[in-house]
Image (cartoon, rainbow, N blue to C red; front, side, top):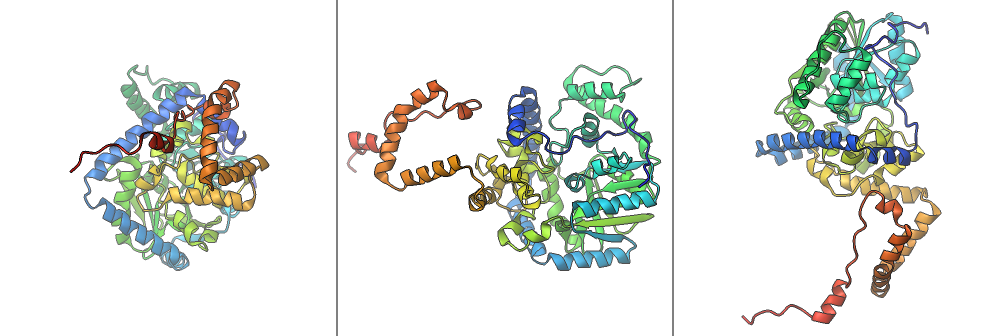
Length: 483
């Protein structure tokens, strides 16, 4: 393919830092050791969770809405082949060109073929987790095409050479001060005055200056690439939800538009948006409604929709795995997950971090390291409580952990430890003896540093001097007044 494009100019686009590079343990250690990262992530997720809680409280029918959405998504996934076919037929009838991509490689090839044939020199790209999943940005850059990320958060991480850290807030891990320094280094603030010192004022000022910098670059593009929040089968409609208006630039100014969408995003009817959109917007950003909701039922000039499988069809065969595809990518599970809130998104090494990423990544990508992701969970159940479509991430995480045992991928030491644990727990007598040994050995083990892998990042729980059974046998039941 002949290389074309505008080149790696400052503020235009740079190769993203995608890929796992360092191992999972190393990424986690780096994240835990970074207090600035933890502070930024906690501040952002606390804000999102508080906003969500307020707008959810306004809907007394919230649980009924969740149940209706869960039933809807379950129905679609049970009949997904029919709904995908219906969408393709109705979209083509309205002038949209529909492609099927079996895997990420085929999806990238379709995009690169369209880009090359249309001699695209300036490419706009909106925030899309599906394009992150297939690593479309690096594939375009490898061929000499440099897509400009139009979402502010995506643009920030593009300048920084990083992948997104969150599904809905890609630069959530960066403070306003870090973004200011990045913009200075990349020339975004050149000739735009001095930034304010107040944190809140700085965040607003940076947004305005980024808009001034990006706006001229949005007006003469040859190609716009998006994902989609939903695909409506009965009308062949592509549904896009956003707050910044950048997606509308991406879908209206270029003569050619490409939407890369996972097949699970199909819904039956346009009326179903009345159920799903309130759940999505409240869970994702804590808003009653997002600023812009675009429904594209046919091309302005030329619209291509690439329906991505990439392992999704295989999940439909298992009823439990199929439920994971209900996810509408709101990111609420990340905002409440104590592990994600500690390490951020990059530690996961996947386009999908957090609890949902720990589930879908092993199933869709299936590399050896991915099967450790379900263990990045405290199993507190908070993700299940906030899921807007009624999935049970907590239960699925347990199930995925069990699969690691079934695959025989645990180390010998782990297998022996769990067998010993099971042997102890199977006998009350052995359990009591183990409790006494644990009390006697806890302090020596701590002093010797043998529990360092645990205590490096957390406190070891103190074992009580006497067990409940011992306390009961010594003191008996509490005395109660005679009625």
